[in-house]
Image 1 (cartoon, rainbow, N blue to C red):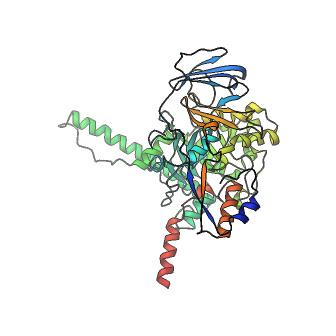
Image 2 (cartoon, rainbow, N blue to C red):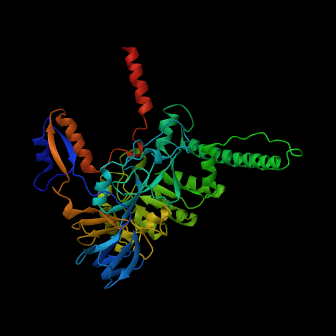
Image 3 (cartoon, helix red, strand yellow):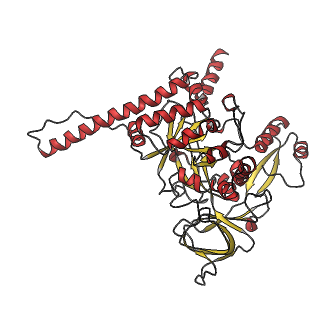
Length: 484
C-alpha cells in the first residue's frame, strides 16, 4: 500500500473506516529481450573495482561491452544521461517468495522431487514494485515447512516475460532446507511423523543422504549390468531393474555438488549441526538463510566455507528468533563469511539499499562492503557471480540508477535495467503511486487496520510458512462441520 506524503497513517485509517481498496495497476513497460544502450557520465559503482566518476557503461545485446569515459555508440543506440546520478549493479535478493503461486508443499519431510519452477506467477505486479527498488534478480524459494523442500528458481525480474522467460537459465540449481521450529511443528506436531525435535531434523537429513548413496550404488550397478547384457545378451544375465527415483536423484546431486543448498535456520546449535552433517557427507558451498544466531559461530562458518544470507535487524517474531542482533551481518563479514542481506518480504525487497545501510550504521563496515551484501555476495551464493552482481565487461547489463548514494535515506532509484532494457523508469511511471484507488464497502475497520499494519512493518509473522497449514485447516473445518 502506498501512502502519499500528505496523508498520515492515522488519517488514512480514519478516512477509510468500513472501506477497502481495489487496486488497478498501471501497465509498465514489458520485457522485450536483451537490448543495447549507452549510459553516460554517471558515478559508476562497480562493487568489485571501485567507484568510477564521470563514467559510461555501454551495453550491447544485454551484455556490458565497455566501461570508461567518453564511450561512443552507433546513432541508433539509446543514450541515458546519468550525469549527477549513481550507477550500480542491479540488486540481488537471495531469499524471496515474491511471485510464487504456492510456497509450501507441506505433505512430507522431504519433497526434493518437486520444483518451485512450477509455481511461478509471471503476472505478479510485485515484480514491478521490486524493480522500482532496483532489484533485478531473486532466489525464488520454497517455504520452510519441510526439512528438505523443493528446488528453488533463480529469476531475472523480466517483468512481462512468461513463466519460462523469467528463469535465469544459466544459474545453478539451488534447493531449500529448513531447520528448527517450522519442520518440527508441521510434521512432528502436525502429522505425528519425524521430525518432532531438532534431533529428528538431523536424523531425517542423514537418513535421506544414506538412502541416496545406496540408491546411487544400486542404480549404477543396474545400469552397468543392463549395458553389459545388451552388448552380450547370451553371456550376461539381464539385471533386476532399479527404478529411477527423482527424489533420491536430487539428493544425490546435492551430495555431488551439482545442487546448492540454501537452508532456513535460526539457532547456533542447529547451524553447527548442519555444518557437521555436511562435513561428514562432503557437501560444500552452502548458504544459511536468516541465521539470526550465526554471529555466535562465525569462525566455524568461515572455516567451513559456509555462506550466510541474513536480515539486517528483524527478529522476535517468534520464540526461536529472540536471540538476535543488528551486528550479525557485520560480525559474520569481519570473520570472513560471505554474507548477504535478504528480504523474505514483498515490501522489504523494495528498499534493500536501506537494509544494507543499517550494516554500516551498526557494524561500521565500509559502504562498498555493505553494497556488496546486496549485489556480488548474493550472486556468489547463487553461483551467478560470473554473470551479475558487479559492473564488469562481459557481465549482464542489469543496472539500477540512483538519484544519490544508494545508502542514503534520501536516495531514490530512478531507473532499473535488466539485460540492457529499461523495465522501470520513474519519470515514465505515471500517477506516482502506480495505482488507482477505487473504494468499496466490504471490509471492516479492524481488517483494514491489520492490513495497513502488515504493510508498514514489512512482513507477515513468518513469510516462509505461507500456506503450510492448509491441509490441517481444511481437516479442522471438516471436523467442525461433522460435529455440528
